[in-house]
Length: 437
Image (cartoon, rainbow, N blue to C red; front, side, top):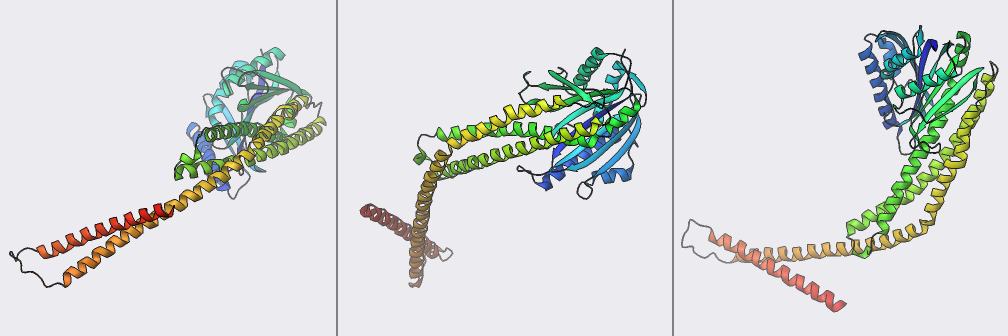
């Protein structure tokens, strides 16, 4: 039976810090909430596991771009040693979880350990999450390759998806086999990876090789960040493209733009403006993908060179991802942008036409408002004149001195005269407009 000494579970996760419509202030607030939840979950599951000073530094995202904290305790009969490493990488936040036990475990016990450690990791659906990669490692004692593959399948079900993985690849890393497992939404390698999650499994022959392999975690962090950024960018560009298509089709479905109200005209113009902004966003996605691909190739090559000094390292299977990006992701996004540009002239023409319609309608509405104000002013002025004139006549003796019928009559008369004056003014304006046409 397969046995692993000192099994470790790592989780490399990333969050967008700034860019593509996300402000630094909002991302810091969201990321701080993610870190607070992590600390809260650990404290709830393992009381007194975290020192207060370490917790404070870990949560201080603004002034502490780098922070680590360790915790330990017993959970579900597992004596756990845990650690979080928080880093700021380029325009992203990087976070590594490291959970382990210092005992020998068989394959079944490993699944129990993974189920215990998973609640100590962050929620994959946290805001601005770019993706995550799980890594299982340890010292391999007994067992064979078939049992290792079975361990990977069960681990994938435990950590990522109960349906298991669709694809796998393998390479050499510091003289041992490194296995990669992932799942796609429909079982096709070029579809968006479900949840943008991967599982890596590497088992070492001894403790010294294990320590050497972990010594390159910073290089792995860069490699995995670039890969997750590419997949995240591809997904978001496809989502944005579909939104732009839907908006454009809604505008083209309008039969008569002249029949739209002023409010709908302005709303349609705003939608056209978003379409033009959407094209810019797609171009930015393409530029980001090309930059991340260049970084990915560079980091893979550097990792391969650095690790090769400790044993055979061949990460050709990682380069297959690079090839798929060059053959599929980038051409698809370039095609979307080119197709959108074919409609650019039509969008600009519609924008100019609607701009003219808005200006005409706005001018008409302004004239209507001015006319209404003028009519109301004539009526009020006439009413005031009548009221003042009526008040200057000698008062008529009242039959019932206890009433104020004189004042009431004056007010009624002024209202009637004001209304008549407003009506006459309105009719005169309408007649003048007709004669002027």
